[in-house]
Each structure stands twice: as structure tokens, then as C-alpha cells.
Length: 242
Image 1 (tube, one colour):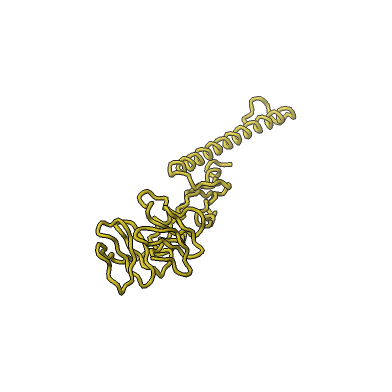
Image 2: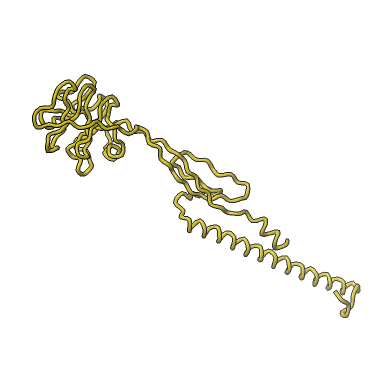
């Protein structure tokens, strides 16, 4: 077999990068401040100035929130698991009908029909009826626009494919894509992928040279055996060309 034929027969190894959008939904949010929790709400405990923090029934009170600096805030988690990190990432109320307010970087919510405020020093949160005025020592806060409950994450997956006609392996979002040998290559760095490619090419060339050498050696042995056989039957003498 010729050397160039062997090289062309070796499958190529190439790196593939797949970017898959992944939807993430958070069904919790920040608690509401009320003078008393309404129907469909559960009491998460008292706060300053006679207010209580409330979460929708079926959600779990997170008080204190496990984020440094937010210990005085109350959040609502969709499950019993700590959702403090999601509370920081999703700037929303636990109920979409509530109004979202920000007291010097600390979010809280007021139920429909109330407006948010704080004392002049910003030490506590308050929710008062829209038709009423804030008592002396309190000031109104502007209502903020909440984030969406859904965030789109771009999950990047890096893997290798071998063979010029092998299509990339499709995977679900966040799942590693295997290469043609079943190896998980999500964590391969670009330098490692380049090393695999170079190593594959070098190995292919070494194999091709070895096969070429065996072919040459086999041909020479066959010529010697043929010459010896002809001598034995008298077909040629020792001075005849091969």
C-alpha cells in the first residue's frame, strides 16, 4: 500500500463547539410587607414598626436570607431548599401582582393597593395604602420594574468528532456531548484539543511508514525466494540478472 493512500485513509479529528440556550425559571421572590398577612399568604414573622413579612401559601419563608448584607430581608423559596442565590439573581417579588421596591439596595414588596416607603434613615421598610400619606419620619420610595422570571443561559459545550462525515452529537442543554469514542470532552481545553489533533496525525504517519516498510521488506523476501526456487529447478544460473 502506498504511503499517500494510507495517510488519506486516516480519519481527521476536529474540535466542535456547541452553544445551546437553556431556559431557567425561578418561582420564588421577595416577601411582601403588611400589617397582617392576607388570605392566601403565610406569615414569615414580624419586622420593624409592626409590619410582617408574608409569602404566598405553598412557598417557603427564607428568613434570614443566606446572603451577606441581606440578613434582615425575607425571601420566598419555591421549595424547602435554600434559594438565596436565586433571590439575588432574580430581582422579582414572590407574587407577580405585588409592587417591587428598593431600600438602598435591599428589595422588598408591597401588595396590590399599597405603596412602599422607608424611614428617613432607611433603616426599615414600610408599605402604606396608596390613598393614605406616610406618617412623619417616613418617605416614599419609587416602584421598581422587576426582572423576568425566566432567564436564558448560553451553555457552551466543546467536544471532538472523528471522521470527515461524522455529524456532531446532539445533546440536551447542560449535558456533555460525547465524541465518536464515547469520551466526554466537555472539559477539554483548546490546548488539549490541539494536542489530540497533532498526536493523531503523528500516530497516523508513523503507522503509514511502518506499513510501507513492511511492504518493502515483504517484496524483497519474495524476490529472494523466487530466485532460489528458479536456481533449484535450473531456470537461472548465479550470473543471471534478477
